[in-house]
Image 1 (cartoon, helix red, strand yellow):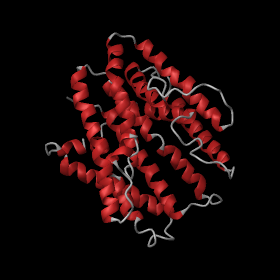
Image 2: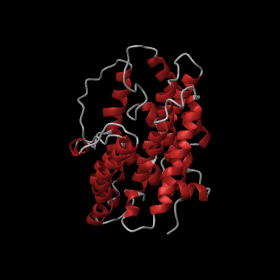
Image 3: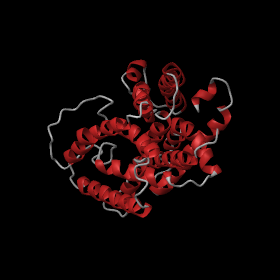
Image 4: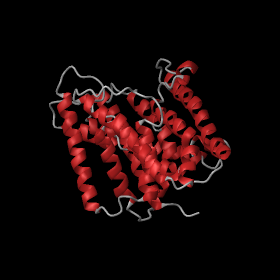
Length: 337
């Protein structure tokens, strides 16, 4: 079966985006970028770009999974069992490395893992999200089989009204008083998952010129960063502000990026290789981050962007090396593919 070059390109962009935000945030923790420096808006811009990774991954998953005709039992056996295993294995692997190799305090135990807290393997929150979406995926597949795609559009609109808009307004201090519903059918991640199918399979933006979509992306990213910088000027604020996945800026930026990259049908062996290794890189890239961070005293005074590049390259290389080493080994290949 021939691979879809557009989806490979999207996965490659998504994992690079994830590496960007994790590397620059780690670099900032080590070097503490000053808010009055020219580097501060650059850092916030890169954070916005880095936030696009998870939505893009979810969109790619939606485009692929909701178009399949797997039996429910086969789907759960292939997907959910692997995710359950990873949710329990990886936190202890990261904990072992940090405690017994680097000398840090333990951060993971069974009780915390069951509550969705994975200690040093903080990137695993994505697996909990994917786990919830995969549980309801067969139901959504049934909707696509009956050609009731209009129902998917309605379901995707619910999180926009119920989550994205209220969350964005809340940062501005405007309260909508809508009750929070912690359900997958009202959540922001559900939107990204379903939108991937709508955008890729229904192709509803096909008549919009690429230059218009690109302009919308640039404009939205600019407003996103400006809004975040303005919000951060308040010395008493806490949290991520606009830099989370539940604001309208992230929604529009992710959707336009997805559409632009989707239109690139050029096949690239490098993008295909990165795409195939993206899951392994996502799971394992933090090991070099923790190792390099243990030399924080020696790295004192190193420009943050050099630290960020070092983290990004080493994290990608480590994850890719594991992928190449384990991908053909029985059972162990489930740790990287």
